[in-house]
Amino acid sequence: MKNVISLKDLEQMVRNGQSLNNLPADSILTPSAREFLQDREMNPGASAAVATAAPTGKPIPPSKPLNSKSSKAELDAFFASPYAHNLKEQICEMGHRLWKRAYVDGNGGNMAIRVGEDVAICTPTLVSKGSLKPEDMCLVDFDGNQLCGTKKRTSEILMHLQMMKRQPKAVATCHCHPPYATAFAVVGEAPPTCMLPEYEVFCAVGVAPYRTPGSADMGKLVAELTDQYNTILMANHGVVTWSHNNIEEAYWRMEIIEAYCRTIVVAGQLGKPIKTFTGPQMKDLLSIKQSLGFVDPRYNMKECELCDTGDWRPGASCQVQGSPENAVGFDAEAEKAVQAITDQILAQMK
Image (tube, rainbow, N blue to C red; front, side, top):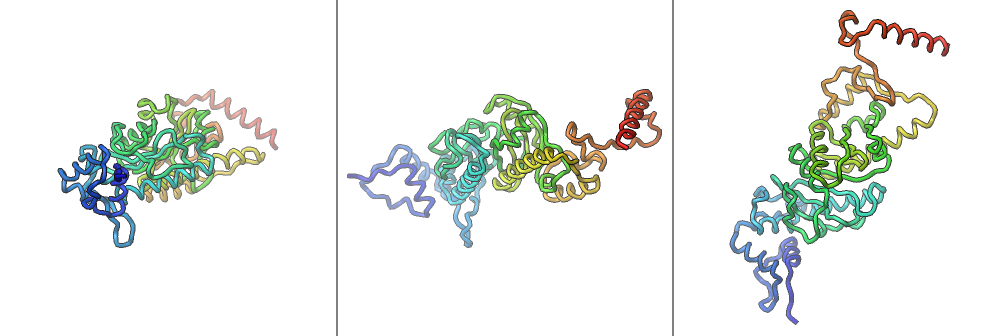
């Protein structure tokens, strides 16, 4: 029986550094495999797009930048390269962690990594994150068109791509449904701030209104928040994060926000006042955060504005410089009423 060689076989050969010039003379090539070889013959430079291993053994990116206009041979060669394979393995590892921590259920959750000017590797649709394999991954352009991969790309890819287009720093994105953080998303409330340093340094949390998952409208609303937030609660849906470093950092944000949300829910059941950071303490944490290159809308706020936690714990108000009568919205009668009520409450507590 003659040997049948598929596109996947050729990609594996490229990944292993094997030559494609010594295929058995009597072998049968599938149509996609034949097209792959023809493209390589017509574009001799395409082989340069194949990432090789550095002397240390760590895969390095291709020397020629990749984009959606790259030839089919270049895209296929990149997708089969050791560099791309390493990124696929990273996505699989994060997917396995998400599943083990019960941050996803069924085939939920999706991830993407930017690998060129307007191309990204992403997870497939209808595959549990607990069983992801490198060969399941897909390559797409920033319009959502699938360029490589045998399985269909995730149905929510438009959100990831719109985030990357809006936020040039976004290298990797991660979306899932961690229960405690998603509970905050269901009520449309960002977690209160100024309680744990890891959360303050690594996460800046915004809330996007609900739209149908996978729709362009959903992606637009989320993308609009990426200028100031790297962790976004999607109302009645879940959480999505982005990183300017790698997919693991995007995943870390999931662990951090989930642990934080769980902690403050439990703390609220202890019957004791929740202690929070002071303004100067928050300034120190935000300085660390800014030095790491993370976004946050509070960098230019005054110390007394940093810990306003809304309905959870009303924050302090900045004192108005000069006479309070000059403050916008000042109501003398209302101020007297508030002071009288405050005095009565304090007297009862004594």
